[in-house]
Amino acid sequence: MAVKRAGAGAITARGSHAERPAQRRRTRKAIVDATTALLASGATPSVADVAAAADVSRRTVYLYFPTFDQLLIDATLGALSQASVDRAIDAADADGDVDARVERMVRALQHVSPEVERLGRALVRLTVDAPAPAPGRGLPRRGYRRVDWIESALSPWRKRMGPARWRRLVAALAMVAGWEALIVQRDVCGLTAAEGEELSVWAARALLNATVQDVPGRRHNQKRR
Image (cartoon, rainbow, N blue to C red; front, side, top):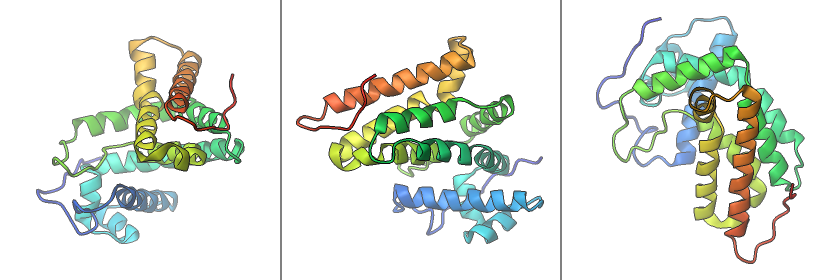
């Protein structure tokens, strides 16, 4: 599979500096969803096919995915993991049991098949090797699904903790669950899959507890284990 890179200055109105983080995630999701649908139909899509299906320009596609290989792997990973993580969050208490929602999400993220892990490592390699985005552009190289899942799991707490604590907790949880955490658990710590999963759950609970203690005068519907 040939690796294609975007030309210099690949910016459109949709991928401009002024675009907000939520809008950037929606644009990225539209590109990945279009790619997933094309792959599911049995097609071998080109960048032009994806751009047309997502209603964006080719330059916008390359702004979010400097190589087409990265986009294809990202779309494949989404098709393999999206439903299982969504189900895990939905199965938890929808009335505000954030502990349960986060634990189920973390377990779903860390409990992956060898094939999915192989694809995840390939995605990390491609995004690490890609050129760094321009300063201030604010375009994450990967992990937008993870951020959406974390925000969904934490949603009952959003109004209670304030914007600064919210952003900090979302970012902290993104560090202890996902591909980077999995690689550290396997390659640096030598943990088994089960041990790594339990470690991520423990770390997520510690972050939730620390956040609760940092919000004065607030009561959260949190189960203590």
